[in-house]
Image (cartoon, rainbow, N blue to C red; front, side, top):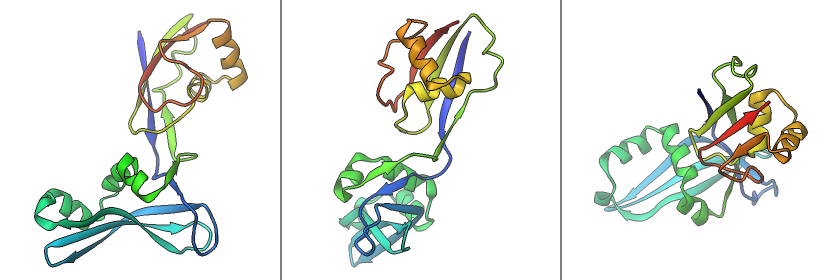
Length: 182
């Protein structure tokens, strides 16, 4: 029987970028947008506050774009300050590259294992699904989901008792499966 674990975001991640006021390196976004239309052109920014001094920075989403080229439902979501849209845009590599930012997902996600009834079996097959592209070490997920230490999980991988088609070292942000043999 295949167990499904889901890595789910609990809040928006911190934005890693240097503050020009206090030299802090993290900003928190609440999902608020600033939309500025000048005749037929539109500019859109996602607002973020410095975690140290509270200064506001604007993360560019759109620049000097023709209003008619923007889908009406997207405009509605921008005007409504849709937090789901903010999460989507923070995940967008184009937006991250344009603004020279990185995301810090520490304490911004949780693992939903659907219960602990699977832990007493001789072998378990697990499919780990990501609700968002959250980079997490598989060793950490397996340790948290199975109630083991990370060192124990590393040992089980080395002994061949945890196997997967993907490399379990480093970070992953895409779905994967593994088998744990007790």
